Length: 470
Image 1 (cartoon, rainbow, N blue to C red):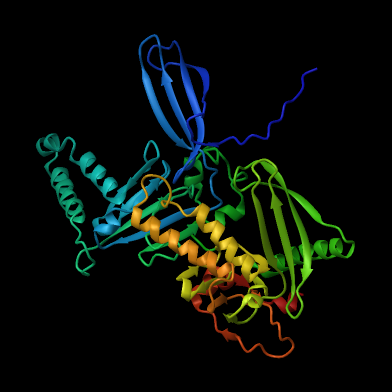
Image 2 (cartoon, rainbow, N blue to C red):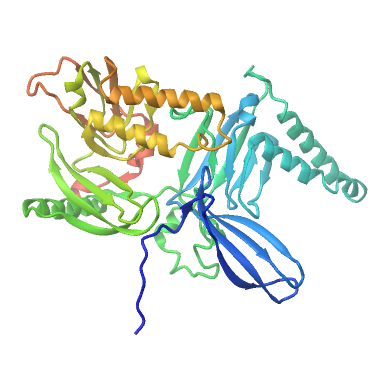
């Protein structure tokens, strides 16, 4: 009887001198004899998980080296739009996955997906485009003069784009768009950990053609395999039926409430977001005094040790957004409970900290705990600030920022101001004077903008005849 052997070792290990690869016998495509392929699954800065492959044939001498991304395909595709106005923008580091297309709208230029992934800069990519387009220009001049002239005009624009001034003078600029349906390409944020005013990120649902391109869908798939919901995501907005959403939410809340009353914890299978090994997620409902019921979910990976906690808010959608501002003056304020929902942004002006909505998901902890979690997340997950390629002065500024953030969390820096801005009004900071007003806390209700409703999907909710049908 054979025995299955399970190992908890991670599939992708950090790159070091003791890293060893795997050798497999494979067919040589030149002489059709067997050669050797060496595989190394590792983790390095910027690329995260990658697969290094090296093939060598002892019969004909053929050699081939290749790098492929080992990252799981993300839930959504991603578009990075960078406005380049000065030399510093040309030096931004870029991870271009093999599935990504690059375009410069001002030049009406689009580069299709490449054969492999690359780590380079904006200047490096534009230089590569110039070299590729310049090939065979002499031949085109003789055979296709119109095509030759069109490419020459484009080459002139690309060369001029590499001569941006040292400082932004408002005269010379172009837009660099990186569109990756796999969601695994990156553009360096020069303002990290804050948002970059020149860099816009947008997530989208993939089209059928993109899913076929990445091997996620059979090219010969019929309409039955490409279901109606996915069809609706192509070329039009997906309309959300509020009745279906409310019924699904009620079932989840009911199951969590019943488990809580029975003093049980619900568990369901999931995959670790760090190493992708199967693990369990635990869920329980908690009633926050003077606020509402929330669902707390916790995941612990026994393979790599990764831990995460997330909070999902229930209840009705508030007609207005809410902004909570708290002045923190002593350690007692750091021990206040805080619920930061996944739709909430928060900032601490004294620390130059400004976290966008969706960052870190939902969290229910104390203010001290939240600041420590932000510190740990930024220290381990901000790309382009690790390794030999990181600029010394930016790295030093980032370290100083982390030190100030740690001082604030440890109670060595007072006073400072914490602001939660939640367009769904699902966030909360404990009022230690309840039911009386808190002199250090300001609560503001405001009307959501059209863009906020669009991001939250509220503009697409079907409410026609809702009351009559129910």
